[in-house]
Amino acid sequence: MPGLYVHVPFCETKCVYCDFYSVEGMDREAAFLTRCVEEIDRRGDALQAKETFTSVFFGGGTPSLLRAEQLGALLSALRRNFTVAEDAETTVECNPGTVTRGKLEDYRALGVNRLSFGVQSFHDDDLRFLSRIHTAREAEDGIALAREAGFENVNLDLMFSLPGQTPARWLHNLERARALGTTHLSCYSLTVEKGTPLAVMVERGEVRTASEDSDAQLYELTMDTLASWGFAQYEVSNYALEGYACRHNLTYWRHEDYLGFGPSAHSTWKRRRSWNVSSIRAWAEQIAAGGDAFSGGEDLTDAMLRAEHISLRLRSEGIRRSVFQKMFGSDIVDDNPALLRQCEASGLLEISDDFVRLTRKGMLVCEEICLGLT
Image (cartoon, rainbow, N blue to C red; front, side, top):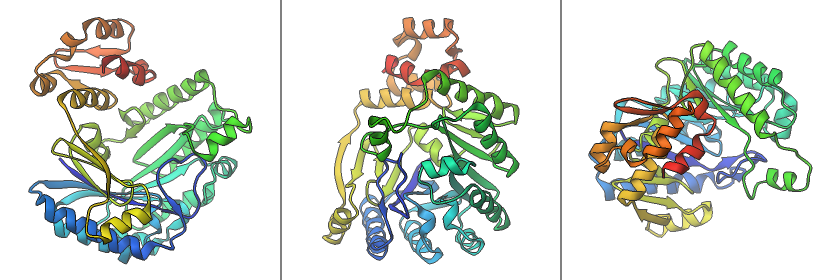
């Protein structure tokens, strides 16, 4: 089922590792809200979508910087223009340093039913290195406030392979997350993205990244630990207790349609992909001028859809052979017999009559397998 996404580009401080589009400060928030509502209205009029949308996701940036009335205005625009399911999963990404119980209670009253906290670590020295604005104590307090405000569905983002991070320090993060009653965890390895302050620090020799062996050790520790606690790994980096897998992210990984609004937001709709300009000023000017804010787009060919289907499905639930056959007119195993059987023999893949899935060992080399198949 399709989903709706709104990119809220404001942050108090830009993190050293982040390459998502965002700006520091909220000096343009009024213009953003006005233009975002206009964009939603305009796309709604143009598309006249008949589908029912089952998820709404506010990402960023730091969406939890928005006051409840601001978030409410955006939600109202989405509900006015699109059919949003009554039980839609509605997520707001939060920085623990930006929430209060009152704000979260107001979010809950608006229909928000899922929060995603960018915790990253429960060690203050790690948080300072990452230039996060919260402390470990504030992270714990923020999650407690979410519980008090009535939220049961709470995700934590955590980051491993930080400089000098030992297995014991990483395990402490996982244990703290569990103790706080977390229902979903997104655990990512620190990645050095071009153009970020972290990339400059690494180039200058100021930061030393983890080795591949160390990274793999921490990843395997994550998989083993969370599995022993009842968290199912339903995507390479995502783990959930039963019933708490993120519906919106599954929209992406199942290669389903979604619409995005705000600067830098992407959309995929009816075999057409488009993306907005990555500048709040240019985006606002284009919307104010009466047009859209696209900076590019492409029609998705069968070959592109096939490659993306393989990559997205393999990294999550696996490739259902009957669905692949129906969509692309061939069997994924027959198309790639040598590579797939070699991966199966090496313990990287499980191949059944109707599924091709990564094993735990295969998760470690997911990208390499996907590249080989696409």
